[in-house]
Image 1 (cartoon, rainbow, N blue to C red):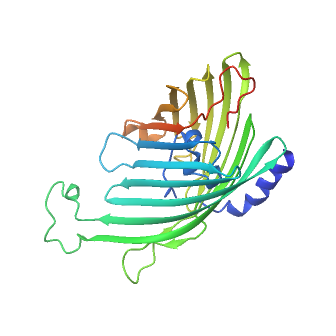
Image 2: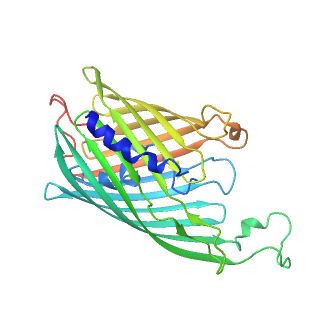
Image 3: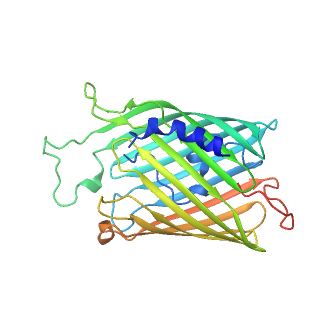
Length: 316
Protein backbone atom coordinates (compact mmCIF):
# COMPACT_ATOMS: atom_id res chain seq x y z
CA UNK A 1 0.00 0.00 0.00
CA UNK A 2 2.86 2.41 0.82
CA UNK A 3 4.36 1.73 -2.61
CA UNK A 4 1.01 2.50 -4.24
CA UNK A 5 0.74 5.85 -2.43
CA UNK A 6 4.28 6.71 -3.53
CA UNK A 7 3.30 6.04 -7.14
CA UNK A 8 0.39 8.47 -6.84
CA UNK A 9 2.57 11.13 -5.24
CA UNK A 10 5.23 10.70 -7.93
CA UNK A 11 2.79 11.98 -10.55
CA UNK A 12 1.43 14.72 -8.33
CA UNK A 13 4.16 17.42 -8.43
CA UNK A 14 3.74 17.88 -12.18
CA UNK A 15 0.27 19.21 -11.54
CA UNK A 16 1.03 21.63 -8.71
CA UNK A 17 0.86 24.53 -11.14
CA UNK A 18 -2.66 23.59 -12.15
CA UNK A 19 -4.82 26.22 -10.58
CA UNK A 20 -9.70 28.53 -11.86
CA UNK A 21 -12.79 26.72 -11.12
CA UNK A 22 -14.09 25.83 -14.56
CA UNK A 23 -15.11 22.36 -13.40
CA UNK A 24 -18.29 22.18 -11.36
CA UNK A 25 -17.90 21.96 -7.58
CA UNK A 26 -19.61 19.06 -5.77
CA UNK A 27 -19.92 18.71 -2.00
CA UNK A 28 -21.02 15.07 -2.29
CA UNK A 29 -17.93 14.02 -4.23
CA UNK A 30 -17.90 10.63 -2.48
CA UNK A 31 -21.14 9.69 -4.29
CA UNK A 32 -20.17 11.35 -7.56
CA UNK A 33 -16.66 10.01 -8.15
CA UNK A 34 -17.24 9.35 -11.83
CA UNK A 35 -17.72 13.09 -12.34
CA UNK A 36 -14.17 13.63 -11.09
CA UNK A 37 -12.23 10.46 -11.89
CA UNK A 38 -12.76 8.37 -15.07
CA UNK A 39 -11.03 5.40 -13.44
CA UNK A 40 -14.08 4.92 -11.19
CA UNK A 41 -16.15 3.52 -14.09
CA UNK A 42 -17.26 -0.03 -13.31
CA UNK A 43 -16.32 0.07 -9.61
CA UNK A 44 -19.96 -0.09 -8.52
CA UNK A 45 -20.26 -3.66 -9.91
CA UNK A 46 -23.73 -2.69 -11.15
CA UNK A 47 -25.46 -0.47 -13.68
CA UNK A 48 -25.69 2.78 -11.72
CA UNK A 49 -27.31 6.10 -12.58
CA UNK A 50 -26.46 9.20 -10.56
CA UNK A 51 -28.20 12.56 -10.85
CA UNK A 52 -27.13 15.69 -9.03
CA UNK A 53 -28.43 19.26 -8.89
CA UNK A 54 -26.48 22.09 -7.25
CA UNK A 55 -27.44 25.71 -6.56
CA UNK A 56 -24.30 27.49 -5.38
CA UNK A 57 -24.36 30.74 -3.38
CA UNK A 58 -28.14 31.03 -3.39
CA UNK A 59 -29.66 34.42 -2.73
CA UNK A 60 -28.96 36.47 -5.83
CA UNK A 61 -29.23 36.01 -9.59
CA UNK A 62 -26.45 34.71 -11.79
CA UNK A 63 -24.76 32.41 -9.27
CA UNK A 64 -23.35 29.03 -10.39
CA UNK A 65 -25.91 26.29 -11.00
CA UNK A 66 -25.16 22.74 -12.12
CA UNK A 67 -27.19 19.73 -13.24
CA UNK A 68 -25.40 16.45 -13.93
CA UNK A 69 -26.32 12.88 -14.89
CA UNK A 70 -23.91 9.95 -15.08
CA UNK A 71 -24.08 6.22 -15.69
CA UNK A 72 -21.42 3.54 -15.28
CA UNK A 73 -21.26 -0.23 -15.47
CA UNK A 74 -18.75 -3.10 -15.62
CA UNK A 75 -18.28 -5.73 -18.31
CA UNK A 76 -16.17 -8.88 -18.51
CA UNK A 77 -14.97 -8.47 -14.92
CA UNK A 78 -12.14 -6.05 -15.66
CA UNK A 79 -13.59 -3.35 -17.91
CA UNK A 80 -15.72 -0.38 -16.94
CA UNK A 81 -17.68 2.06 -19.10
CA UNK A 82 -19.26 5.36 -18.21
CA UNK A 83 -21.10 8.37 -19.57
CA UNK A 84 -21.33 11.86 -18.08
CA UNK A 85 -23.56 14.76 -19.00
CA UNK A 86 -23.57 18.08 -17.19
CA UNK A 87 -24.87 21.60 -17.64
CA UNK A 88 -23.44 24.54 -15.70
CA UNK A 89 -24.50 28.17 -15.78
CA UNK A 90 -23.16 31.34 -14.20
CA UNK A 91 -24.41 34.77 -15.18
CA UNK A 92 -24.92 34.82 -18.95
CA UNK A 93 -22.53 31.89 -19.46
CA UNK A 94 -23.57 28.29 -20.11
CA UNK A 95 -21.41 25.18 -20.41
CA UNK A 96 -22.64 21.75 -21.52
CA UNK A 97 -20.40 18.68 -21.29
CA UNK A 98 -20.68 15.20 -22.82
CA UNK A 99 -18.12 12.63 -21.74
CA UNK A 100 -17.41 9.01 -22.61
CA UNK A 101 -15.29 6.93 -20.23
CA UNK A 102 -13.31 3.67 -20.39
CA UNK A 103 -11.54 2.01 -17.45
CA UNK A 104 -9.55 -1.19 -16.96
CA UNK A 105 -9.13 -2.88 -13.56
CA UNK A 106 -6.08 -4.81 -12.36
CA UNK A 107 -6.01 -6.82 -9.08
CA UNK A 108 -3.37 -5.59 -6.63
CA UNK A 109 -3.14 -7.30 -3.26
CA UNK A 110 -6.55 -7.25 -1.60
CA UNK A 111 -7.90 -4.54 -3.87
CA UNK A 112 -8.20 -3.32 -7.44
CA UNK A 113 -6.28 -0.64 -9.32
CA UNK A 114 -8.34 0.92 -12.08
CA UNK A 115 -6.90 3.08 -14.86
CA UNK A 116 -9.33 5.19 -16.85
CA UNK A 117 -9.51 7.53 -19.83
CA UNK A 118 -12.18 10.07 -20.66
CA UNK A 119 -13.05 11.70 -23.98
CA UNK A 120 -15.14 14.83 -23.63
CA UNK A 121 -16.78 17.51 -25.71
CA UNK A 122 -17.94 20.84 -24.34
CA UNK A 123 -20.12 23.63 -25.64
CA UNK A 124 -19.62 27.14 -24.26
CA UNK A 125 -22.13 29.95 -24.79
CA UNK A 126 -22.16 33.62 -23.75
CA UNK A 127 -25.54 35.34 -24.15
CA UNK A 128 -25.09 39.10 -23.86
CA UNK A 129 -28.64 39.58 -25.15
CA UNK A 130 -30.01 38.10 -21.92
CA UNK A 131 -32.76 40.46 -20.67
CA UNK A 132 -31.53 40.10 -17.08
CA UNK A 133 -28.64 42.37 -18.03
CA UNK A 134 -31.07 45.26 -18.60
CA UNK A 135 -31.87 46.04 -15.00
CA UNK A 136 -32.20 49.82 -14.88
CA UNK A 137 -32.07 51.36 -18.35
CA UNK A 138 -32.11 49.55 -21.69
CA UNK A 139 -28.79 49.74 -23.48
CA UNK A 140 -30.09 48.91 -26.95
CA UNK A 141 -28.47 52.03 -28.40
CA UNK A 142 -25.19 51.77 -26.52
CA UNK A 143 -22.74 50.44 -29.12
CA UNK A 144 -20.05 49.98 -26.48
CA UNK A 145 -21.99 47.14 -24.81
CA UNK A 146 -21.93 43.79 -26.56
CA UNK A 147 -25.38 42.34 -27.29
CA UNK A 148 -24.41 39.25 -29.24
CA UNK A 149 -24.57 35.51 -28.55
CA UNK A 150 -21.25 33.71 -28.86
CA UNK A 151 -20.62 29.96 -28.89
CA UNK A 152 -17.68 27.63 -29.23
CA UNK A 153 -16.98 23.90 -28.88
CA UNK A 154 -13.88 22.09 -27.66
CA UNK A 155 -12.75 18.51 -27.18
CA UNK A 156 -10.47 17.13 -24.52
CA UNK A 157 -9.12 13.96 -22.95
CA UNK A 158 -8.56 13.00 -19.34
CA UNK A 159 -6.84 10.35 -17.25
CA UNK A 160 -7.45 8.84 -13.84
CA UNK A 161 -6.20 6.13 -11.48
CA UNK A 162 -8.27 4.67 -8.65
CA UNK A 163 -7.30 2.02 -6.09
CA UNK A 164 -9.82 0.54 -3.67
CA UNK A 165 -10.36 -2.38 -1.36
CA UNK A 166 -13.07 -3.11 1.20
CA UNK A 167 -11.97 -0.35 3.55
CA UNK A 168 -9.85 2.18 1.68
CA UNK A 169 -9.63 4.10 -1.57
CA UNK A 170 -7.14 6.45 -3.21
CA UNK A 171 -7.60 8.20 -6.53
CA UNK A 172 -5.81 10.66 -8.76
CA UNK A 173 -7.22 12.27 -11.89
CA UNK A 174 -6.80 15.04 -14.41
CA UNK A 175 -10.06 15.28 -16.42
CA UNK A 176 -8.55 17.78 -18.88
CA UNK A 177 -5.06 17.22 -20.22
CA UNK A 178 -5.28 19.77 -23.05
CA UNK A 179 -5.28 23.53 -22.47
CA UNK A 180 -7.79 24.40 -25.19
CA UNK A 181 -8.55 27.85 -26.55
CA UNK A 182 -12.21 28.71 -25.85
CA UNK A 183 -12.21 32.35 -26.92
CA UNK A 184 -15.41 33.01 -28.88
CA UNK A 185 -14.25 35.96 -30.98
CA UNK A 186 -12.11 35.31 -34.04
CA UNK A 187 -8.58 36.61 -33.68
CA UNK A 188 -8.64 36.83 -29.89
CA UNK A 189 -7.05 34.20 -27.67
CA UNK A 190 -7.61 35.33 -24.13
CA UNK A 191 -9.78 32.48 -22.78
CA UNK A 192 -8.64 28.92 -22.20
CA UNK A 193 -10.10 25.70 -20.86
CA UNK A 194 -7.82 25.24 -17.90
CA UNK A 195 -6.42 21.95 -16.71
CA UNK A 196 -7.50 20.42 -13.41
CA UNK A 197 -6.08 17.81 -11.05
CA UNK A 198 -7.74 15.93 -8.19
CA UNK A 199 -6.65 13.63 -5.39
CA UNK A 200 -9.28 11.80 -3.35
CA UNK A 201 -8.91 9.33 -0.53
CA UNK A 202 -10.97 7.82 2.25
CA UNK A 203 -11.47 4.92 4.60
CA UNK A 204 -14.06 3.03 6.65
CA UNK A 205 -13.50 2.34 10.36
CA UNK A 206 -15.83 0.23 12.50
CA UNK A 207 -16.79 2.09 15.69
CA UNK A 208 -19.21 -0.56 16.90
CA UNK A 209 -21.78 -2.89 15.39
CA UNK A 210 -23.87 -1.04 12.78
CA UNK A 211 -21.82 2.15 13.09
CA UNK A 212 -18.99 2.98 10.68
CA UNK A 213 -16.89 6.14 10.63
CA UNK A 214 -15.84 7.25 7.13
CA UNK A 215 -13.17 10.00 6.91
CA UNK A 216 -12.61 11.24 3.36
CA UNK A 217 -10.69 13.99 1.61
CA UNK A 218 -10.68 15.67 -1.80
CA UNK A 219 -7.94 18.01 -3.05
CA UNK A 220 -8.58 20.14 -6.15
CA UNK A 221 -6.20 22.15 -8.32
CA UNK A 222 -7.03 24.31 -11.33
CA UNK A 223 -4.80 26.69 -13.22
CA UNK A 224 -4.78 30.28 -11.96
CA UNK A 225 -6.97 29.54 -8.92
CA UNK A 226 -6.30 28.77 -5.25
CA UNK A 227 -6.36 25.08 -4.43
CA UNK A 228 -9.26 23.68 -2.40
CA UNK A 229 -9.37 20.88 0.15
CA UNK A 230 -12.53 19.15 1.39
CA UNK A 231 -12.03 17.44 4.76
CA UNK A 232 -15.03 15.19 5.30
CA UNK A 233 -16.04 13.05 8.29
CA UNK A 234 -19.09 10.83 7.91
CA UNK A 235 -21.00 8.24 9.92
CA UNK A 236 -22.93 5.32 8.44
CA UNK A 237 -25.66 3.82 10.63
CA UNK A 238 -27.05 0.32 9.94
CA UNK A 239 -25.79 0.50 6.34
CA UNK A 240 -28.71 2.84 5.62
CA UNK A 241 -28.36 6.28 7.20
CA UNK A 242 -25.42 8.50 6.30
CA UNK A 243 -24.55 11.84 7.85
CA UNK A 244 -21.39 13.87 7.39
CA UNK A 245 -19.75 17.24 7.83
CA UNK A 246 -17.15 18.82 5.56
CA UNK A 247 -14.71 21.67 6.16
CA UNK A 248 -13.73 23.23 2.83
CA UNK A 249 -10.64 25.39 2.52
CA UNK A 250 -10.31 28.13 -0.08
CA UNK A 251 -12.05 31.45 -0.54
CA UNK A 252 -10.11 34.54 0.58
CA UNK A 253 -6.43 34.05 1.30
CA UNK A 254 -6.80 35.19 4.91
CA UNK A 255 -9.60 32.73 5.72
CA UNK A 256 -9.00 29.25 7.08
CA UNK A 257 -12.19 27.88 5.52
CA UNK A 258 -14.56 28.79 2.73
CA UNK A 259 -17.53 26.81 4.03
CA UNK A 260 -18.77 24.22 6.50
CA UNK A 261 -20.95 21.66 4.73
CA UNK A 262 -23.54 19.22 6.04
CA UNK A 263 -24.65 16.03 4.26
CA UNK A 264 -27.50 13.64 5.01
CA UNK A 265 -28.26 10.51 2.99
CA UNK A 266 -30.58 7.53 3.15
CA UNK A 267 -30.65 4.15 1.41
CA UNK A 268 -34.35 3.62 0.72
CA UNK A 269 -33.53 0.06 -0.38
CA UNK A 270 -30.55 -1.83 -1.77
CA UNK A 271 -30.83 -0.01 -5.09
CA UNK A 272 -31.96 3.53 -4.34
CA UNK A 273 -29.97 6.17 -2.46
CA UNK A 274 -30.82 9.83 -1.99
CA UNK A 275 -28.92 12.60 -0.21
CA UNK A 276 -28.79 16.34 0.24
CA UNK A 277 -26.02 18.74 1.21
CA UNK A 278 -26.08 22.29 2.48
CA UNK A 279 -22.98 24.48 2.47
CA UNK A 280 -22.76 27.25 5.07
CA UNK A 281 -20.38 29.90 3.78
CA UNK A 282 -17.96 31.25 6.40
CA UNK A 283 -15.86 33.48 4.11
CA UNK A 284 -16.78 37.17 3.58
CA UNK A 285 -19.10 36.03 0.79
CA UNK A 286 -21.58 34.96 3.49
CA UNK A 287 -22.78 38.56 3.72
CA UNK A 288 -24.20 38.38 0.19
CA UNK A 289 -25.66 34.88 -0.21
CA UNK A 290 -27.60 32.17 1.62
CA UNK A 291 -25.36 29.14 1.27
CA UNK A 292 -25.39 26.36 -1.34
CA UNK A 293 -27.83 23.46 -1.76
CA UNK A 294 -27.06 20.17 -3.48
CA UNK A 295 -29.39 17.20 -4.03
CA UNK A 296 -28.27 13.76 -5.23
CA UNK A 297 -30.21 10.69 -6.36
CA UNK A 298 -28.59 7.36 -7.26
CA UNK A 299 -30.19 4.16 -8.55
CA UNK A 300 -28.29 0.92 -9.21
CA UNK A 301 -29.74 -2.04 -11.09
CA UNK A 302 -28.58 -5.25 -9.48
CA UNK A 303 -27.45 -5.94 -5.94
CA UNK A 304 -24.72 -3.34 -5.53
CA UNK A 305 -24.54 -3.72 -1.76
CA UNK A 306 -23.77 -6.93 0.06
CA UNK A 307 -26.26 -8.22 2.62
CA UNK A 308 -26.11 -6.34 5.91
CA UNK A 309 -25.20 -9.40 7.97
CA UNK A 310 -22.05 -10.15 5.98
CA UNK A 311 -18.89 -9.33 7.92
CA UNK A 312 -16.50 -6.76 6.43
CA UNK A 313 -18.69 -5.47 3.61
CA UNK A 314 -17.25 -3.47 0.74
CA UNK A 315 -17.62 0.29 1.17
CA UNK A 316 -15.57 1.60 -1.77
